[in-house]
Amino acid sequence: MNASTQDLSFSATVEGGAGGSRLPALNDWVAQVAALTRPAAIHWCDGSDAENEALTARMLADGTLHKLNEETHPGSYLHRSHPDDVARVEHLTFVCTTHHEDAGPNNNWMAPEEGHAEMDALFDGCMQGRTMYVIPYCMGPIDSPLSRCGVEITDSPYVVANMRIMTRMGAPALARIEREGTFVKGLHSIGELDPNRRFIMHFPEELTIKSYGSGYGGNALLGKKCHALRIASHQAKSEGWLAEHMLILGIENPQGETHYVAAAFPSACGKTNLAMLIPPEGYRNAGWKVWTIGDDICWMRPGADGRLYAINPEAGFFGVAPGTSRNSNANALASIQSSTIFTNVGVTADNQPWWEGLENGQTPVIDWRGNPYDPAKGPAAHPNSRFTVSAKQCPSYSPMAEDPQGVPISAIVFGGRRASLVPLVFEARDWTHGVLVGAAMGSETTAAATGAVGVMRRDPMAMKPFCGYNFADYFSHWLSFDKEGAQLPKVFHVNWFRKGDNGKFLWPGFGDNLRVLEWMIQRVKGEADAVETPIGALPAEGALNLDGITLDEEAKAKLFGFDRAAWEAEFASIGEYLDEYGPRMPQALKDEQQRIAGLLAD
Ligand SMILES: Nc1nc2c(ncn2[C@@H]2O[C@H](COP(=O)(O)OP(=O)(O)OP(=O)(O)O)[C@@H](O)[C@H]2O)c(=O)[nH]1
Ligand SMILES: O=C([O-])CC(=O)C(=O)O
Ligand SMILES: [Mn+2]
Image 1: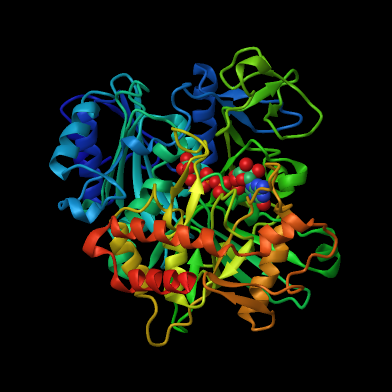
Image 2: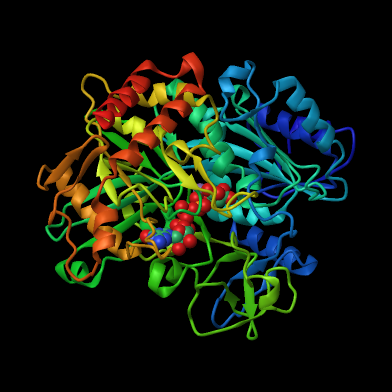
């Protein structure tokens, strides 16, 4: 126990861990938060099994968790959220910087004093009768120089249980925080779960997050989007690194060489799937292996050799359940057979978790709201239902994911959900073009955020909801990596979602995406042929291995072709988009857009 905690003007029981820290700045902040929120008890999380068991017992007793079938899914639980609290809320998410322009047109903005006042009014007394949990966590391997720490204060034991899986949480993180003296401060309360009293606010200049009124992952597990993307992207800009919405995977060829690839796809657009790819049979037999490093977030920094080295700051997966099956993602399915928290899925008569696309021959009887399943009333699982599971349970999890130095990146891939126009794959000609390819990304919206689904919007580098500062400055930062001595990855763009005239996907996707990755790695090594077009280099006929799959003429034309007139219109729209950022948009990027628009017009 420490002096500041004892100084509280009201009484709260202090429990757990050491009941305080050796860092006065942390104790003082906890005391201030307790004085504002007035919890009945303060619990310092140590991350131990005993602590987790006690919390789980509490959540089973109060209905926060439901035990699933112990025989088929040992140690696994179902959580049903409030039905209005099932996804990220971009319209309620703010970046509060001193100057409005620093947040940019890509963010909702409020002045920091106003943001604090708004939030502190919500937090006033909000934890009365509840326990306040103090969660020290580390994003990244505990001994990595690339990792960063934070402390989340929350009144939700569900958040504690999820943070325990998604981050390195508890005593070792607290020890690192005490040693370093700095940490990101995240304050969270589920409040009344009222959509009208809900805000997710970021104060990047103060390394502070305040989140109120939601228990949903991206809004409430503050280590994830709030810290590892919005706050970290801001820190990364000033410290010379990158915090990105990217998966990281390793591709081992039959010669035993492994290349690491980082890929940015928007929410619910295939990162988890690609990260856990299972090679098609022919590749498997030949000795190809795919290793998972991360499925959502990537922190990258130039190493002494000029290459970019990446770590996955997370320790678990918060993955989309619907569509996960033995066929689409056997590694994910194997990972979630035990010790998993399922959120908003349906259940079967024998109490197993169920979702659309599970394809295991079973049927749901209860839907995600806890009502008897009635197909007329919608899906059994919410389209954005999720599983939370430790990365260590994934059969393809790479031992290199724990390497404090990170892995060297050979290729960066951008991609979106584009039913038309965009071919299966193309390669940027250099870094500047690659940055433009990322900046120009478009994708159809998904159920990962509240709002309309299937609407095409610009989502640069899949960071539209997550960049903690002005996109114009972000693109300048990306461009700045191209300097003397840099050994930058090649940049590619992919589209697994191109549709034919019948509205069906033209590319088989999933495991077969390895064919595209193989072409990329051959390009990195200078071993595969390509056809130059104004938008970039496309695979030459025969350069991409299509053995074992059949594509009809329409598919071949659309997946590997390039429609000049349609791209000319796309580039006009990209130009307008860049102009929305005014004079802060780097000239080099505008010049690159002009260069390609000129080639298309020729
Ligand atoms: N057609 C097609 N769909 C795919 C492919 N890979 C993934 N998907 C679909 O993408 C959706 C799920 O994507 P995930 O991998 O869970 O999404 P994610 O990018 O990890 O998303 P977040 O966790 O929200 O950031 C499901 O609808 C899948 O069916 C593919 O290769 N082809
Ligand atoms: O943040 C979340 O809740 C899930 C996620 O990965 C995303 O939406 O991109
Ligand atoms: Mn994500």
